[in-house]
Image (cartoon, rainbow, N blue to C red; front, side, top):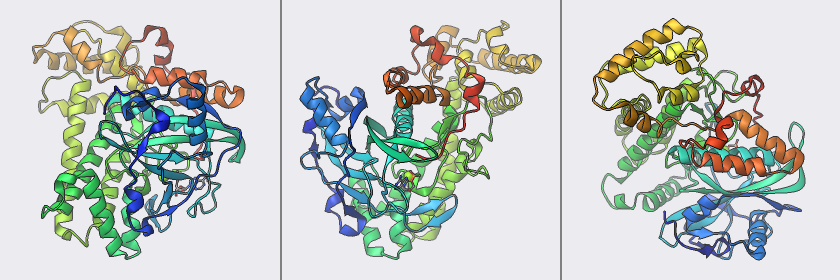
Length: 494
Ligand code: AMP
Ligand code: MG
């Protein structure tokens, strides 16, 4: 993505390929404007990545707010609600679709990249079912901050351009206010987009959609005789790699339904997600997930299951045996990526056979001692061989347990020829100092919703754009969460 142009954001040029497809894939729909809207936050970095910027001129800011609140459309935007279905908590739901968001269109950046812009919270659509078509300010702040945090951690994700708030009441567990968010993504096609046409037996439409996806996202495959196989293989591999990132960074998505699985392996649709504080392999962040289907340690097998759902849909184009074979690539890609990320997190130059055991022992110890996942790895960057490393050791109740692990780790480090300074530097580029802990997001939400003060949202946005940097004045954001912060129950309503 280019970073140079200074074209005002209000002059985006659209290229609505999706809207040219047969009309079974969407319903064209205008946003329902939000009343009394105001800008909550604008992400310059995303605008620059799109090749645009928001000038400081009042008319440009006003224009953006009008657009993001659904009062006005970008010239050439062709808003539409996309059709999809999906497996929710393992059960097929035949009709989902964009119930409160609209694809405004696809943008071409000056450098030729293509991005989907989606207005979340844009009002009712034919797919709203019992919903009101709105999103609350609380949930847009969570998506806005977390997607940006993920991007800067190097984890594939959608991003968000801005949040606009309003005084329009929205009824969830309590009365909240409506907001919108402009989501920027490489695609808004989900596994569920394809499932809909397979399960409604619309094979011609399904083929049109698969061909569209190949043409848009894998143009190099068009016309090749294994295009469908390769399309599936790459989707499986990208999904597996994404989950490896989640596992390595301690991220739990919370609602890995197939309608929330991006076709291009991006983290997609932020709901009751959470970064683990204390290491807990069974961590559940979604409080309506009573069986722990989407717990931290279930994510790889659920993603595999979701890929199998996508494979099923491709049966008209790919032999079932081939689909099974291609699905096997999930495990290979996941294990490979995850091992590589853990290697980097431990500061190892190359993997040896015993490293898996070293990692496993560490996790067992961290689980028993409820050690903070992010803080531990950041502290480990400053591990000095042959010293007591009290600052790390003190994170464990079982100090002897830590000592014995540290002894093995130290021995492992002697097998490589790097020096402590360069190792520490490398480790600090993969082990973040700052993550979006639930309690940090909550503090920003409280300020925004109770005091209409968005400074904390903007402060966190800036902080999380440099998660690996020391940022000394921000030190307090890297501390262990307070007890109340660990016990926050994140509402699934959004
Ligand atoms: P989500 O849980 O955000 O992934 O949404 C699941 C489905 O419910 C999608 O079809 C959404 O469009 C729809 N949905 C969620 N919230 C609302 C709402 N407030 N109004 C209308 N539809 C909604
Ligand atoms: Mg969703």
